[in-house]
Figure (cartoon, rainbow, N blue to C red):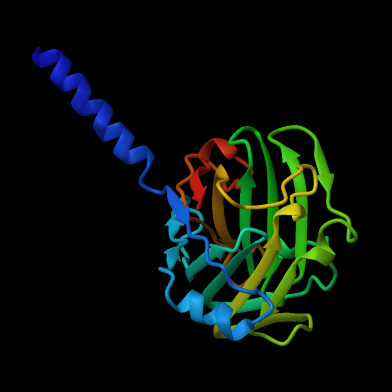
Length: 235
């Protein structure tokens, strides 16, 4: 009996650890084109930190980053809030190398498997999106079926610039329709049970950094690891 109790306790602790970073995304019936209404909804949404520095020995710098998210069925709204010691936005066209800039990222696996989408944006709202199989095929998004569908609202002027030294706080809101997941047949975010991770990086900023929402157990920085995504349930 004692052995069974001990096993049950261990399983419970493991379950708690595994689900530490799970998240529910609420549904709010709001017109996403009414920005004042959207901001009002966001004011009532709890911020989620992107604060796991998984490689502190090699990349000790950690900017302050969090995001808020909700959906209205058709659209997922994500707003990022960043304070960092240097800022960069040299990628000027969608599909460019935004991860070299001050960059925030959302990775999502609709089926909670090895196939996922990476939606990456620099601080001026330039996007890089693809559909991937871990360690395998990559399909890059095209403007007509993905980029043009996503609304971007950067707090910074939407013009590229080279590295700026000095503390900067910026925000970026993305409004993402379900059909932007271009290899799936999704028309709504309603009831989606998936796995995701959220990131902040900046390969060519003053101090390179690689932060995640859910922790990653890899020897070197690597965000393309769906085994370390965690559960996200859309209301």
